[in-house]
Image (cartoon, rainbow, N blue to C red; front, top):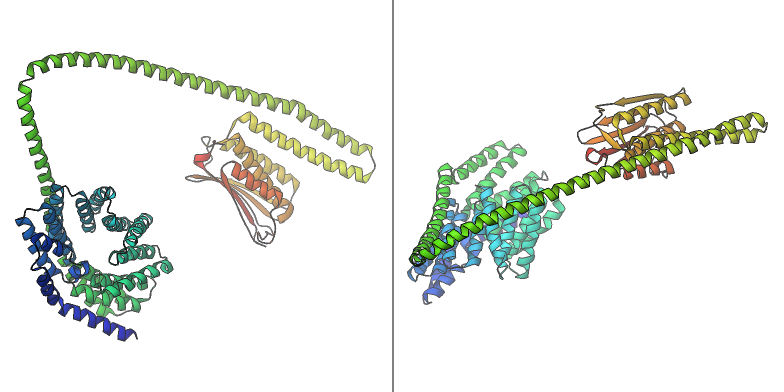
Length: 609
């Protein structure tokens, strides 16, 4: 079935090539009796796919239209013909001539004040420059879009949005490209333009292909191919077969890719689409190499080089630059001439007002000097007031900080002197009561209460430590962690505790809230490991990386499956503590493989909470 379709496809292409001259003979016959303006307009309306597949004859026709437009001195129609010639030469591969004609089109559209056409030509020029000077292409494209967005006719804007997306995709900004492709598609669908819709669809498909989203890309290619097949759009079909080649190549389906590249190359050579022929030849050489067919790979590598030699060389680039300079210079010379004309007219009037102007000038100078002095005085006052207000704010802020610090010290003293001493008294009392009573249940209960009270005293001391500090350096936190680890070692002889750190410096500072929460997370993690994990080793590691601070607690215990157990209050509290200080808690564990709990905080968020 594929062979039959391929044979039919080549037959249709050959028939079109043989019928080229017939189409233009009939076209000239149909416009022979029209008025000059109508004849020019009919030539300008030549279908795009006809122009693209029969470029040489289209150029001849456009040149005839240009000659007629010049004779009737119609700048708008002259610009139209130059614009069509620029497009035709672009698809013929003569890029220097293409740019020259497009610049001429812009010149005449601006001369006739046709902003919409000028904007469209600027956008076209941006698209034509994309493979030679991408920054310049963006410049022309933005200028064209700014003009077109102010126009009521949105059809040219659709093409500009699509071409703008192409520039973004060439600049590796695929998301921006998709944004403009979909904007262009929305407009063109509103006009039900069967010529423009496939371009938008293919652009979207290519963007998804570049993101390796093959299932999203394929439907857009298929819809575009269906429309172009119905239109028998040879330029479009050549491009679509190339897109299919890329689609299969990127999925390593090299033979299907080769079949589509061959179809695309056949058409692109028929219609003299030089750049596409070059691209197809290169892709065929690479694809044949992938399947080990080095003979065909060499053949198409030579074809690629031959097509490449046809494209713009260094001298052509210089010529294009000269054309742009010439175009800009001509515009500036025109503006200078207009300015000189206005100046000459004003000079005649100024001779009659010289005496009055002299007096006014002196008065103006005096007023200016006075105004400058007043302005400088007012500015000095404003600057002085700003500085005074800044100093007041700084003093007020410092006073507030001092008051807060004093209040925290007072609260910490009260906690230490009152609640701390009371809890210590309660602990001592319960220890004494254990010796008085002989009831085992009461003794056990008193032991539990004593342990709980001592734990509460420890937490109270940690809180007082944080409140007294105000801010906590990494060294402070390290010392507190080491003290806690020493206490933990005393509770068990069967577990080895290891503390490691890197790059701890005094410059690294946490807020009191962050310091306490980090300490509590480590404390809870170690307690969980000792109680439940049955480890032989617990490692507390303090890392300071380029942009992150990381504290991890790992053990070689029995681990647990997060999917099979519900997180207890301890783990949930650790997650809440991490969120409270602007960090992220990570828990990695599996059965019989130990547990790693780590908390990460960005350096930029330190001392903010």
